[in-house]
Amino acid sequence: MPPTQLAPHTPGLDPNTRTAFLVVDTESIPDGELLAKVKYPGDNLSPEDAVTKAQEEARQTSYSGSDFVPVSFHIPVAVCVVRVGNDFSLQAVTCLDAPHFRPREMVRKFWMGVELYTKAKLVTFNGRCFDMPMLELAAFRHGLSLRDYCQRNRNRFAGNHVDLLDWLTNYGACKLVGGLNLLAKMIGKPGKMDVAGDQVYRMHREGKYQEINDYCVFDTLDTYFVFLRTRVLTGDLTPDQEEDLVKRAREFLEGKVQELPALEQYLKGWEP
Image 1 (spheres, rainbow, N blue to C red):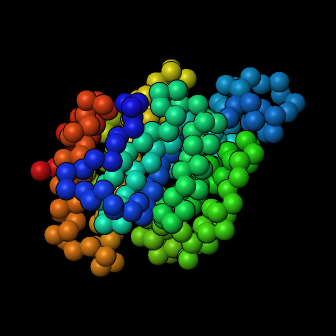
Image 2 (image 1 turned 120 degrees about the vertical axis):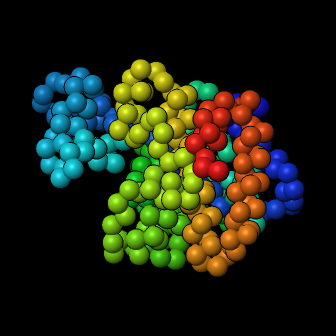
């Protein structure tokens, strides 16, 4: 079994528990070739120079100085999924196409999984604005069918997708300054540690593909634990049930450190 595929074996987990949620996070980089063709067709720029120019233009127009290039120019370099049971238990953690991390294969395997777990709801943090459009455009690029997803998920309020940022901001009525990092740290989970999203492009150029996917795993797990807390708000879980699920999830992750060593860093970031 690949080191980044964590098997669904949790102490006390009912083997008949149905997968009800797929918690998803991605990391991506700008597509320099596409930028050069679309934004700078007459400039004869290399892919790297096209990214540099697009990032500088983004900084100049951003109120916060962000160099983020629009999602339409991104390609995935990490796609991580946490499978969650209908009892909200953590069933498995997967980095798709490990250890190769080929964009097309990550996208293909992601959409195969979505089509396989047709009754499972997608859970993301800001996925409606970024992760899902990026993965949809990647499917468009590679000619992949998203039949069931297109029928079930493309409804902001009643679809099969729970975007936690959308939900916590009353569907965009307010800002959530601090984002996932804030929410994770509120509930004693690691949040951001040594890596942030704006480092991913540089890390990819340095060949640090596993490190990028480790970071993506951390964000996906943070999203899972934030999801659990929101289910306390909705009344789907009691505080005691959440505490038990978190304890079981920690036992699960502790048992997988040998397969995915980066989990040791994640677990050390938990508050007691």
